Amino acid sequence: MKLIELLMEAQEAAVFRENASTHAFIIAAKASDNFAQAVAAALMTIGKFHAPITAARNILENADKSFIKDAIAAGTRIPGYGSSFVKGGQDPIFDKIDSELLKNHQQHHARIWEIFSWIKEYKKTDLYPNAACYTAVVSDISSVPFGAEIYLFIQGRLPVYVNLWGQL
Figure 1 (cartoon, rainbow, N blue to C red):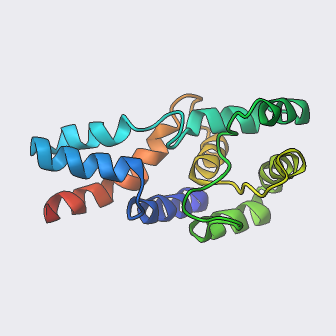
Figure 2: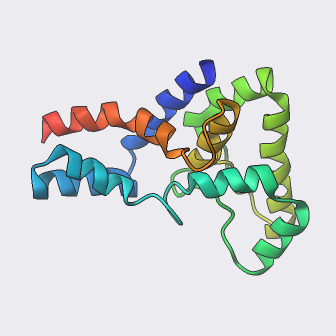
């Protein structure tokens, strides 16, 4: 439960960034004057570039060093790593989650940072774990069925969307 609480805090904080889902929510809310359609628009941004949570979970569960090397050589993004919000360091909104993982879920924490080290080795740059990575790992630990990771994304962002709706 502690990890889910920390993830909800981080997801709430993420809403206030200049991200695709927040922009889509606001634009759709103004254009449609319909809360459900605005939420659907926000969710429709999830995938390849924004919040690739299921893909990040697949990386965490299945990728090996060779996969990471080949992906980087091909110029492919590694879902769950890299941020357009924080460059050259760990994103502070995930610090509490990372600390909790280190304290109580060492195997998962080690896996996140093992992949980070492979990316650094082959890409020659630091691409830190991002929201998709942490949402994926919390989904795994919380036994969220594979493919349903979006549930934690929605759960964390929906309360903020409700507040935004009231301000539009």
